[in-house]
Length: 93
Image 1: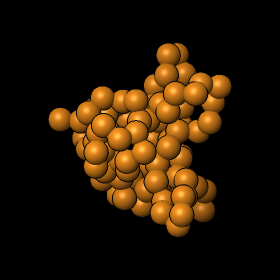
Image 2 (image 1 turned 30 degrees about the horizontal axis):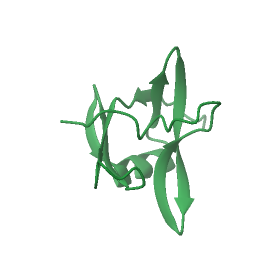
Image 3 (image 1 turned 90 degrees about the vertical axis):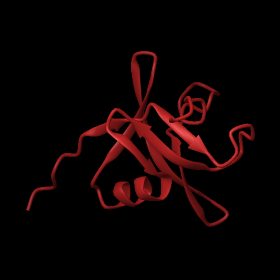
Image 4 (image 1 turned 60 degrees about the vertical axis):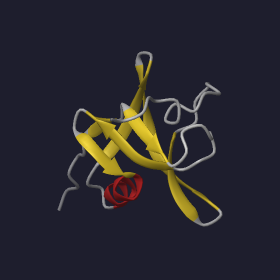
């Protein structure tokens, strides 16, 4: 059976557990499609139900799952920028 092609949803905002600490964990991501927890976004990506991206200038940068000290988290794919595209998004309301 052929694999379904997944549309990527643009992430336009995030919530962090501590907004002032750039190393703190993202708790939620959001966009025109609504807002979900980071753990739900990770689950959806793993199950191939959704994909996410961040708009940087004229480019779409893919949001991927990474692991640090055994904990999974979301980040953008590496690019030539030193700015963390996901963490620099505004706060979700």
